[in-house]
Image (tube, rainbow, N blue to C red; front, side):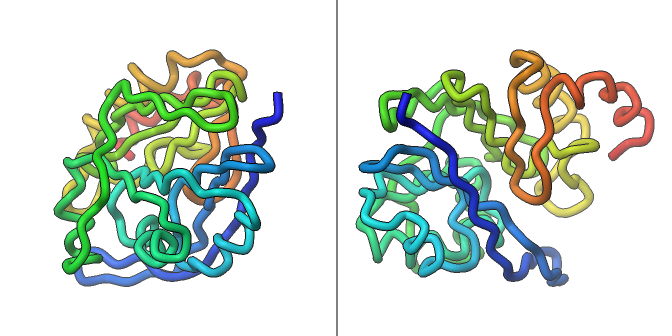
Length: 209
């Protein structure tokens, strides 16, 4: 198998509900020496393009519409010609960040993207935002959870367009049902595994975040 996962960390800001915070984002590149897909074009299109190198960028997949995950997507698309994909339930968040540009295509639950001889399965995992998705790569034993699941718990649900019961349902029914050894590649911070997080579900429900 030639497909591999590369990680780039970029820095910028996240803004919503009148506040702005400094953040470091994980940008994930999945592919081989010829073709690649980027998950979450955050903050720095030039740095992402450098990480892509001479490979052909086939798609820019947005796990959700918060500006820190999509702010570099239009510029990266312009640099590479790759389409930007987002779940339509987050179109309003996209429009807040990029009012003069539309996404190129929708992501839908159950959709399969192919890259470097492997399949990437799109899983709609709402809660952090209405259109949040996770991307499962069974051949790589990995899921890219965006801001839905982190090491230590669910993504934040205290701001507009988010809902805690919804994210718990997404995590419990769609992510924690994956094989325990599946590596969870998150939108921020360190990796974890399904097996490491699954025993803590009840604790998260009790604490409410």
